[in-house]
Image 1: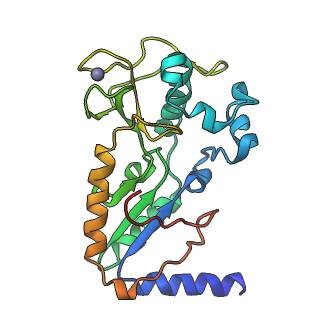
Image 2: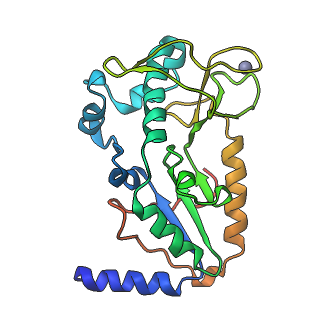
Length: 232
Ligand SMILES: [Zn+2]
């Protein structure tokens, strides 16, 4: 199929759609200028200081215990990057497409950058299956509390990617806080916020005419959109 025909078919499908489910992964942020950490080379280009180590190794809650300044350096640097980067124009285009569908849209994203909310997508229509860097929790949950990182600023040395004290603390017990991001080998992620989003998502799905469901890959994404239905 030539690309002109493929775009026309995609446009026709979206135009006739009852609802739009937007699946997003790291590729979505590339045009905003965000790194997607694809493969070790991609990770090391973004963070040369971690050369020889893998993303899965660094994005691991164990560092909040072993070396909190490194752990918060990595996540604090990303928090600052996501806060200061504007979502690209494709977000607004997708939002308009979704808003004109009779049953609206829903976003299923594995990104933790909060860029759909930043691009004015309704928070009740976004599911972040890996959590969000804009929210915090305790390192070893003393409670199931999740709170906004809005008031938090983290200074990070750009060369060493190490955070400068003082690091975020749990308001209840004073212990070290961490992002409410589902990391690798993460047994302590607090899923409460995700579960609320999952409820919104299931309610939205239940209101659709499932017989007409059709999932197509968006030509805007650089990698196939992944549909992950149901509970993990
Ligand atoms: Zn606590």
